[in-house]
Structures are given as C-alpha cells and as structure tokens.
Image 1 (spheres, rainbow, N blue to C red):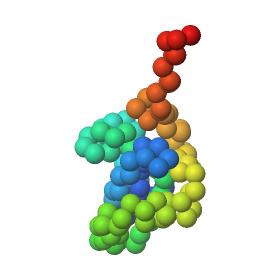
Image 2 (image 1 turned 135 degrees about the vertical axis):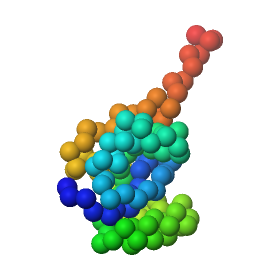
Image 3 (image 1 turned 90 degrees about the vertical axis):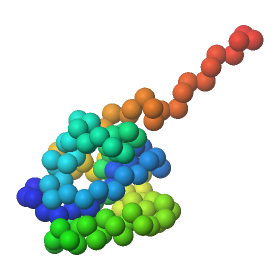
Length: 117
C-alpha cells in the first residue's frame, strides 16, 4: 500500500475503547500501535484492532476528518463502524497483519468458585 492520508479508528475489542488517529502510512502506524511503540491513550487502553479507516486525498482533509470524528458522540462513531463492520472485525488482516490477540484486560474474569460446594 502506497503512502496516502488516512483517518483510522482502533478499538480495544467489540464495543470497547475507541481511538481515532490520522496518518500518511497506515501499515507503519498499525505496526507501531501493535508493538506498543506509540504510548499514550491507544497503548494504555490496548486499542489495537483496526475497525474502520478512510483514505483521503490530502493530509489537511484527513486531519479535518479526524477532528470531525473526534467531536462526534460515541453512538455516532459506533454507527459509523458498524455500518461496514457490524462485528468490529480487525480490518488490519486485510492489510496483511495477524489478528490482534485478545488482551487479558479485555476478557471477562472467570467466575469465582462457589465456596459452598
């Protein structure tokens, strides 16, 4: 994939934490996110699953779209994701990446054993 301005949405899991970013090199940025090289919000919340992306013509267009999406209510962001990706599948697979492994913090804890048994 050639370098092209892009706005993207990462999620920690289905209906999880959402991160919106902008880049001119989506594969390189995804690699950095998945290797925990970016730090900040996305790293803290393990938002590494690419659930939506849009290619734009210019970087100012991409930055404008990023600002627009960040200003949206969460319900609108979820609707945008689910319009083309209803199950929040990892679209990075389409770009040649391995699926994101489930992070322990995104899994539900096991039910404690019943002490009365």
